Amino acid sequence: MKTAESLILVTILQCLCMVVQVQAQTKPLSPADALEVRKRISDASKTTGSLEAQFTQTKELSVIKEKIVSKGNFYFKKEKLLRWEYTEPFPYLIIFNNDKIFVKDEDKENHISLQSNKVFREVNNILIGAVQGTLLSDTKNFECNISDLHDQYLASMVPVNLRIKETLSEIILYFNKTDYTVDKFVMREVSGDYTRIEFSGKKINQNVPDAKFNIP
Amino acid sequence: MFQMQSLIFLNLVLILFLSACDPVKKSTLSTSPENSYKAPAWNSPFLKDFEKALFRTSLDVADKHLTGISIIKRTSDSSFHFTFANEIGMTYFDMEIFRNKYKPDYIFDPINKKSFLKILQRDFAILFFSESPGKQPLRKYLQKGSGEVVYLYLGLKLYAWMDTKQNTLTGLVGWSNYVDAVIVSFKEYDHGFPNEIRIVNPKIKMILTFNFLGH
Image 1 (spheres, helix red, strand yellow):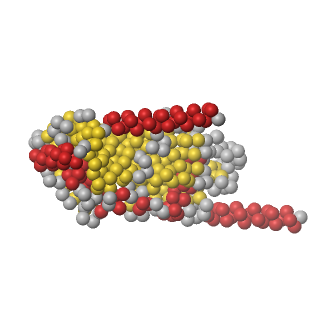
Image 2 (cartoon, rainbow over the protein chains, first blue to last red):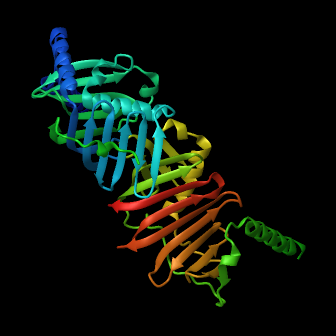
Image 3 (spheres, chains in turn green, yellow):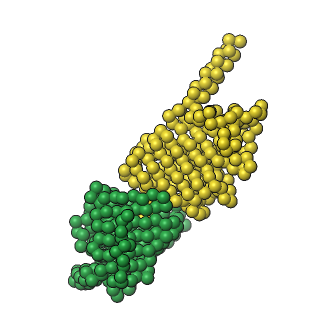
């Protein structure tokens, strides 16, 4: 009996420690501060005409405790031009060009119209919104909470749109406190899995050629 | 005596019935000249020392073309875990496969159909759990063109293709009736594991392709 009680006590203490650790890491912002951070992110987004970076994407599989890591290059240009160029573990390319999507894998090319494909339209909105930070003002689809995390601001986006809710339970955006651009974002799925996309070597407002977004 | 005749008759009917359901075109095979059909021991590359592997994966079924990365992990002597997600990381399938059942952890809604998942489970069971049985095959053929040896295990409703020079399993065909066949092919073996695995299910017009990325 004593052993069982000890086990329960240890478990409770461990849980308390975890809660304290999480709380110590993030500090919720006051409404006024949250408003100020939103404004700065919005201002940064307005002045960001283009963005170029490398990315590392890690998908964490909760059930089997495994990871899938992909890497590549990322290009964004206002208003709605996006190029995800995967280089590892194999080449794969997605170009979002306004209302069109072009996907190229090893031997297949696929053209998709955003107007006719709701799923891709939502993916497009989420990716562009996450990169630009405009997802924070998408109150129709997400409930947003901002907190302070050392050298970053963390925006937790919980979907309120039923269609998005079916797949995603939360999107977390991490904004750099220096330039208010996105350092990384995490997409938590309802399955418990999550995908983390981290940017490195960011180049803001450098000359990204339009040809990068051309759809053949 | 009468009972014996009935038994022989029943067996004959059963063999004829099973043969009638046989999905393999005999015109592509030539009969082995040997009288006895001793087959070497063989097994699926997912048995023996297999732990886990990462694949570039594509699934074509009905009007859907899904691509991405999958992990197949052996979780026990009688189960494998299959997770398939698109390139951006969104999960299509997350399920545990057993010999006779499956346990879905998450299935992408547009493909979450019980009948489809049951077929997929059966196809995976043939891919994961097939190995040479204790009994010798009923027939031995040679594949025209490639020269691969083909063994027919009628009781198991299974054909196995072997490259006898490399001593590797190159294909499997399993079926429960004529319209319910699955064709599995293993290509380009490297260090005992195929670089490409393809599952074709003609009934539902499904092609599932795995290209090995790493263990």
